[in-house]
Image 1 (cartoon, helix red, strand yellow):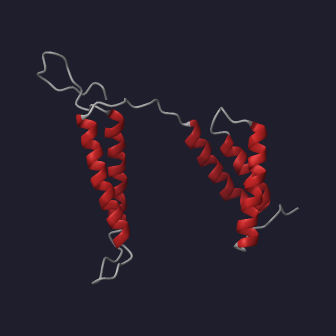
Image 2 (image 1 turned 90 degrees about the horizontal axis):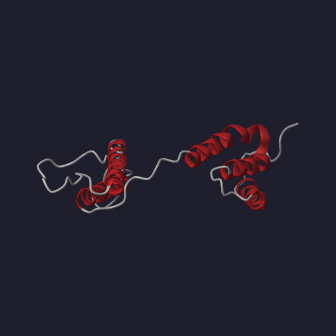
Length: 162
């Protein structure tokens, strides 16, 4: 990204992208918002004064596209920070915890699965203090069990079937 330079500047090459973080962040948001706008194309729009199912998603996607274009412009004009190094540990660990929950909630039950999911998610950082993570995991398990099993009466098994 630093190799993109304007030609013809004898006093020193200035990068085309002055702030890579802003530029590529704006570009990613632009792709996301354009995809959302495209995916909501089959939903009904406004009819008179009433909102259709696709009105609000398209309005939000349009607003995000405008803000993304502004962010891209800022990335081209105003100097800013470079892109940080890519850290995959956090996102991959959180993804793994979600996948674990999806596959384990039926055989293991909500209590065991929510506790283990919390502990797997705690692996996302090297700074995890395991004593605190265990206490927080128990609290989160109690909350999830109370909310989803007792409060909302969702059809989860409570404990593993032995």
